[in-house]
Image (cartoon, rainbow, N blue to C red):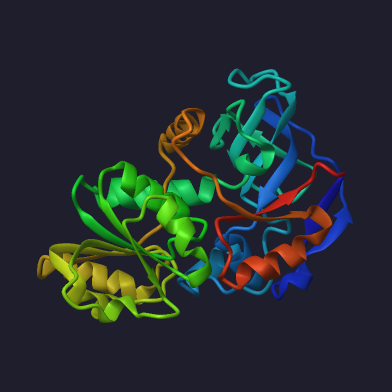
Length: 321
């Protein structure tokens, strides 16, 4: 089968299209034919080796060279083989969610993988572009920040892969949303539900006066607690999803001193994939795709996504193979 393989860290050009052996399943495993995958921030950070929380994270992914040769986490595809012990899925099922080594024509999963049956209305491209953004948005907004109706929140990075879902979910939860994005995405962010939109090319939101937010959700990691503190209400939360040792230290001391809090960390899926499916089936969630690349152009897809200006998701399709 065809797969994108890398043997070292570096620029997008380290990603090479190669022929490798098709995997063989065990009795508790599922073989899935990949129709589409995507480029998440974690994908290009792991590819480059420039991951948060160095050096701990480098120990996990490989200090000098990658432990995992095939990248990819978000995926949609079709079940083509099942082991005798598998009960949840059957051959022919169309699934979406997350896996490992999915930059390939086939990958192996188990029933423990975070995979769900695709709604009939969902395309494979859409199925491969929702997991990371949606799960991150709902985890931090609902489970961590416990967003409430009537709260005022600011979302920095409102047009990105996480941001487009954060704006929609916060609005559905009854919050008043201010989105921060570039000029070309102002109308999009407003259409997703933001009451106010700040164009960061024209104004620095951290210098706003007479504005207070219950939650500042920095998805792109371009602000700081110290700059945002004056914009936060008495019990306000500064939420930054790009973890660092500095943020963990701030999170520790703000949990002990004062009422304004810093929170960071890594999203967990829980039961949210089922909720995602329900929202898609009831047309309550827009899925935004910026560009679609064929598998052999994965290096171009990484180069584009890594610039940090993508709108929604960058998808890689395998349907042409």
